[in-house]
Image (cartoon, rainbow, N blue to C red; front, side):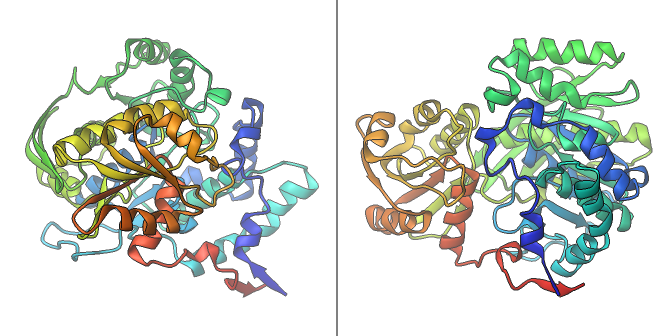
Length: 467
């Protein structure tokens, strides 16, 4: 008998693949609590920080993990979705001294769980999990299972702290089944309105649901007043005074370019001349939110230095976030999939490449506001190549759709992300720019074509072990 990892993971209900069919009633914490019980309550042996938001939450988690690692801690990092391999979601960063710099071109998903470790953990917990699913009739989902698996791995690896990114919303997200010391809320906007609500206030209420206890510390990015009012009210209900970046922590950007951003932050300490290799002013904001969260962790016994902060921010990598690849032509990949993130991408593009336009490879999931995305991106598009990712949620756009979304711009259509990269390369020539955006899934597939990387281990059917 053989155990096929991919087939087992795909046996769980995967709302990521068919989010349009999901309703709010399909999400909740009761199943996750039972699942963590089947795993032996590993969350009791791990300390957590938790990040929710509409944009920038993955980057903020990456900054958090790298700062804490630079401060000397072993850090668990749980993010979603993945670009190539499901194992990217579950990572452990080992502490590294300031004198040890990462090698050039090092693995952007350093520390991800190995195939062997993942199979071992899946197999070890298969019996109690399947008993929960089959005998007790608990319909565990794909994301809930991976969340519990990640927490069990972090407990086994004895991490000092685990950084968790919410998957959808916050109040009912699987990651909210654990108790976090510090919560962070990145910028909010309208997203997943069929599930989270169609007003900013409703979405803020869902995201602020990660705030669950008076003992927590809370850090918040600048928000529209409608969202901030909801977050303040949630904090007041627990007697919490949140730290708001821009009010309680000052941020000043010195310069930015294709190689990143230089900026200053003043919180409880002064951090001068911080440098991140992630491009865009919004990444300086994400780093500031992470810094404020790490400062709050000092209330729980963690130690931070200005040197560790600078090192961690400098070393943070987060692929497909204004990631520049190649030379002739240059490709810019960005997973912008909300109006706000598309606006941030376009603003960064205009700053980094002033006066220039790109051949834009565009595709999005069917639940996204396509008109809003295109409205922000049209200013940087010289030509548009429409592409549909192979993901089930991807929207299949026609040339007519593209011409309506990008008025006045020449539009063509490719049958796949790989074909879109080839078409854009021919259109742009060796001195041009190609931008890929609108969808995490599209960026992932285009990135594999550009870099020549193979699919991840979760896509290889031969990954089995005997049971």
